[in-house]
Length: 137
Ligand code: GTP
Ligand code: MG
Image (tube, rainbow, N blue to C red):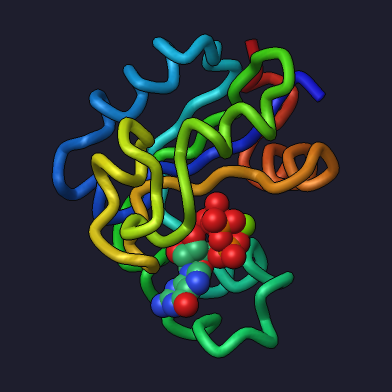
C-alpha cells in the first residue's frame, strides 16, 4: 500500500518534538496527506487500541495516550507501512536501531514517541478514525 497512519504521542508533543519528528518523516520520503493536533478522550483511545484490549498494558496505554494532545497524520510513500516501521524502529527504544525516530525521541517502551500502522488494512482503519475525505490532500 502507499499510505500509512502515524501519531506523534503525548510526550513527544509536550517536549516540542513535532517539528523534528515530522522533518525526519519528510526527509525519508513521506508526504503529508492529512495532519491534525488533537486530544483523545480515554474512551476514544480505548477504541483506537481495542486490538490490545487483552494485553496487560492496555489500561496504562489508554491513560497515556489520552494524557495530552497528539498529532495524527496520514503519510504517503511507496511501501509506506513497512518503510515507516523501519524509520521509527523497535517498539522498545532500547532495542531501536541508531538513527530511528524512536532511538532519538522515545523515552520508554510506553512513551515511545510515535505510532505506526502495522498493516495496510489497519492504516486505512486508523486514518479513517481521525480524518474525513475533505481533510486529505
Ligand atoms: P505502535 O506503533 O504504537 O502500535 O507500536 P508497536 O506496533 O511498535 O507496538 P504494539 O502495537 O505492540 O504496542 C502498542 C503500544 O503499546 C506501543 O507503542 C507502546 O506505546 C505500548 N506498549 C507496548 N508494549 C508495552 C509494554 O510492555 N508496556 C507498556 N507500558 N506499554 C507497552
Ligand atoms: Mg502496533
